[in-house]
Length: 127
Image (cartoon, rainbow, N blue to C red; front, side):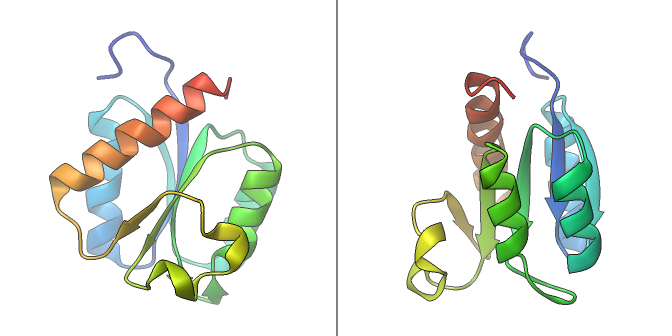
């Protein structure tokens, strides 16, 4: 549970169904609401632009391309993001190098810790 902290709406963009379910379980286990998982770029872009969100977890490679423009929209809105990728940080656009990244594959414990940190950043930033 969130231990009295705000309940956040967490956008999850992930095109691997099993990974998406793991992320969904972890987010809900921490007491937050999941928006998604979303597998396609177009839908992710719409939600990043229009949905009321607190933060987001973004797989880099999704159906329709990379989630870089989704990250750009969310960051412009002031929302914290967590990037998921098996890519090395050097392969990401320079503008995203400083964003938190959880390398794939990851353990459940690593996922929960990163989500906890992401949601903490969102609450501290006033989202």
